[in-house]
Amino acid sequence: MSALSDNLVTFAILTYLIAMISHAVEYALGNARTRAVVASPARELVGAGVGGGGGVIPEPPAPVPPTADGAARARIAGLVAVAATALAAVLHLAALVTRGLAADRMPWGNMYEFVLTVTFIGVAAWLVVLWKRPSLRKLGLFLTLVMVLLVATAELVLYVPIVPLVPALNSYWFVIHVSTIVFASGIFLLGAVPAVGFLMRNGYEQGKRSFPYTLAKRLPAAVSLERLTFALHAFAFPIFTFAVIAGAIWAEAAWGRPWGWDPKETWAFISWVVYAGYLHARATPSVKRNVATWIAVLGFLTMLMNLFGVNIFFTGLHSYGGLN
Image (cartoon, rainbow, N blue to C red; front, side):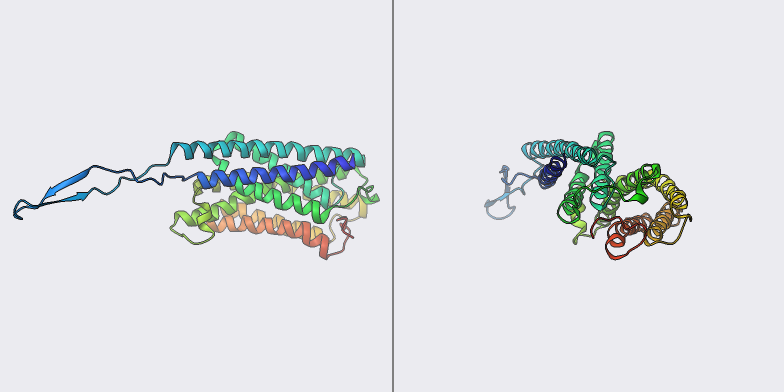
């Protein structure tokens, strides 16, 4: 069962890669135009007062609209990308289920399993968003890129064999605390994608034509990306807040104190403050949308620090990364 889980993760990565390539093809074909110059009838102009002589001046070519073939191919590539993303999500889920069955526990006991679960939540939430708002499909290029990078990192760098839970994790609070922190982290992961997309698209709409703003020229309108960013963060923040509170209650039961400024507790608090700051800035009319969105991006960076930096570079009561 463990070997099956490992193989399913590999197949999921390859399928995410296919989805990313298909999205890239759709992206490239989005503005496909015919290259042939359509000849237009010449217009004969006779010069007045020049002995009846005349000249033939061709009319300038009319603007060439996007080709129907190019639009059709782009649409097909987009549909293939969505289908591949859905298939990858199924493989991803199957890998988690088989990992849990092999371990006889929930598959959240180390960094490898945690990253796999967070990324699955992110892609599952993306499919729900896409089902409700198909117009956001081109954002899938960036989402699948994130999936390939994170899931491949988990498989190639963070992988550890299945081992029993450490005694401190053998509690019903393990399910309560970790499930909510995983779910909130997955939604924050998804929320970071339209946040970065908004910052690029907003710059493009303001006339910036340098890298990376040109990458966003085929993304949905900046206002749509900003609203999606806010909706995802507003949804995830209360869940994240509950997860932090549940962790404090669990710490009281396990270690006799609710809070001890352990490195992971400290960074969880930092993430909570930053995300609270984003929601406050987003609700303040005097704060520009791009400023508030930068705070959301900073919040996700603190989450990455809590996941990777704390587990790799610090030692504390939460050192269950499985990398040692």
